[in-house]
Length: 63
View 1 (cartoon, rainbow, N blue to C red):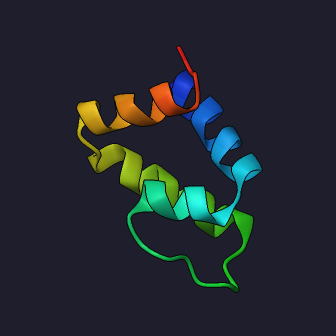
View 2: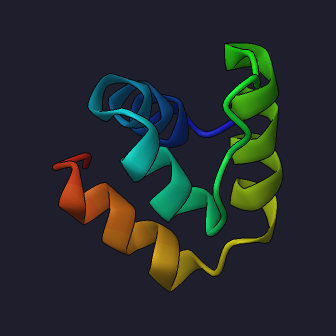
View 3: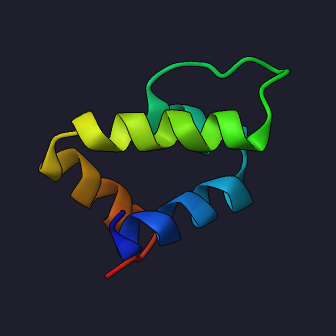
């Protein structure tokens, strides 16, 4: 997994569910564990267009 993406996931968890849901593109279930959310982010990352991913890196100041 990309080091920048790992940093992005940490930032998303720090900022909370609204930001995680923005990244995922859907609402997360309130009973999801951190591992479930983490796996969902991995799946979205694999399919996300590079340009969209770059926007998240820029938003969270990740080089």
